[in-house]
Length: 243
Image (cartoon, rainbow, N blue to C red; front, side, top):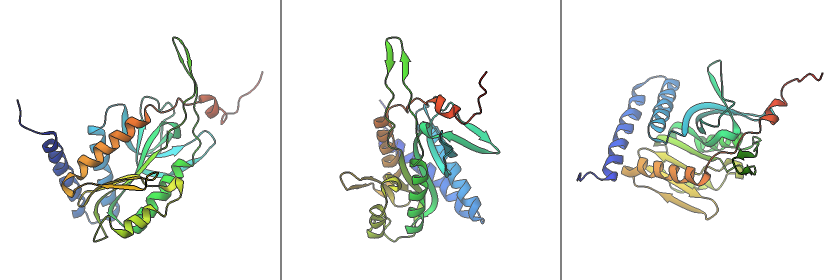
């Protein structure tokens, strides 16, 4: 029997991710740095999340013509994203298919925490439909849309103490739609925040990816499957001729 522990395996994955993140620091252009870091996170998530989930840079739309800001990383249900469009290099996803959204930055600070909250709000304010589902024994009622998870992912921190009072002040300054639930600072550990209980949970620096990944899986598990899209609502954008 192997004596390799799960903790050791996750530790190896964390070192690999940190090596990729460090590569972005040698790039001179700030946009190149950001794009490289986003790609690393997206590749990492797609490599380890269960296959029902997909991570991608995207813009989110709804049946009423609403549109979000561009999201660095959206985690969505690939199987039930009937209306995913790739137009002019931009991926557009229906709001119903979204599980979580993340902002990716090089550093965590007040400006970027506020920015991440506004990005989350642009998604959570969208209209999500829910249709009944037919099955062999009858019909399931429309599912109530879940709360979309929001987070921030960075390599380092502009704060000396990444999770000190300035960070906690940011967490408590959000409106309901802006709330940031979780995140990872590779050099300082990960966090999750339970707003209902006012409880902040932090990981050790050396366990940042282990904590972030397992916490993300727990939250995704709670959500179950995304609601079925009411395609009739989206058809309302078409001009239909009556004979």
